Image (cartoon, rainbow, N blue to C red; front, side):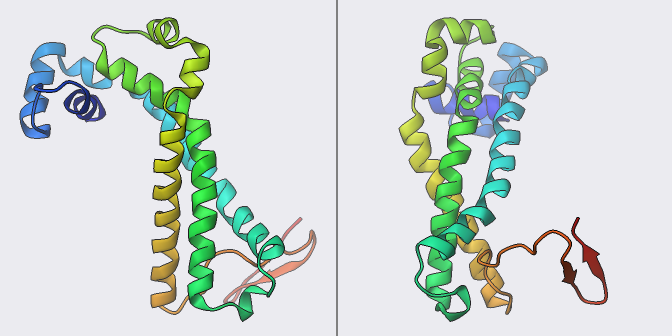
Length: 186
């Protein structure tokens, strides 16, 4: 579907949407054309998702540790949700940076018939692959990821759960106490 979406977005007059774009695309490139960008697509989504989850909690903990003058427990829910958005935004910046070269590849491969990764590198150059469109992607992905974490924590607040982050992980060897279980961190 990504291939059809990119074609609709980048080639005016190709189609109005998925319903008329899909048959046109398959007729022109066959079903195999739908999958030619799958490896770069995974190369974009996997690092993006890993970075989103790997960095968010640490960023939020550091915001509480270095930027907020009071412990999380003394902060209003509004401030905590603001910290979640800010932490998500910064995590989104990291997501955008690590996934951007693959995003450029996906767009290039889905927009140029018969193109290869080598063609993309020749046309965009290695520097272009890493930088072309990056500031816009940072704003877009930062905002999107900030909103995702903000909505996630707002939902948690609605159902009576605490917002994310702000509690330092236990030191090595300390026990985490759960509902009827204990885990030992080594």
